[in-house]
Image (cartoon, rainbow, N blue to C red):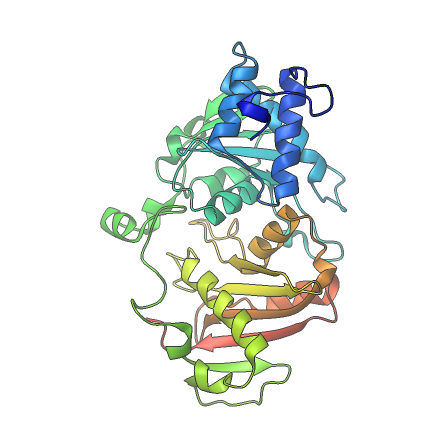
Length: 342
């Protein structure tokens, strides 16, 4: 909690904190914890610290604090975002740019916040606050959410619904029928897995390529291929779980990734598609967001396992190799191509 006995106090003086100081502390705790989440109870304490302040104002103070953690080496323009979930928790995001990598590898703060929400299994976002008006790219990405038209968007200049910011929009139901959207779920919703029920990573048939893996064009059980490589088995299992989490209703090309750093920590990422295609996020972008949330340097990546589908219309190996060549040139990349995920 933010203070002893759920009271917002200064850790040194034990005196009540003002609302801005309390928000700054809440953000610092979320960043230090490495989850980039302000819990529902922490948010309630922040609101109680200044009963006259609206929820939108609290979120605006939050984003002004969190934007200090953005990583924009190209633009130098820091952006912060805070997405309020139906659970009452707030999911933080910042913009991230990768040096010497094409701009389409950048992560927008709103995208980052939704990745944070997805990592926490939040199912619905009801409000999002940003330090600047959401760009068209982000408005389109947020349109993947159920009831997106009702999403309240708060920014320094005011508050509007997404429908007001993105009129006459193109979205999921332009490509999916309502039955499919309800059955499979939209972004953040609980949805059917990308893997058959009861099938584990070890049951999958795949071709695996990369450092230290003998080339074999004939798909075999993953368990057989990695039988004697315990370290790689652990990464592959995590990459498989990310693959299962991916949101790819349009191309049917889910992908997952897991990276191990020099400290032995493991981070996952998954593909997230947009009906408009271009605002989609690669698994490496989601992985980057998760590492930045923990304050990690991408240069610390030592080994990566990417899992995708053999023959899929959308593949991520080339873009992952491009990014790794710049941010972690000594990292090993292993690619698992499933032949029978469904």
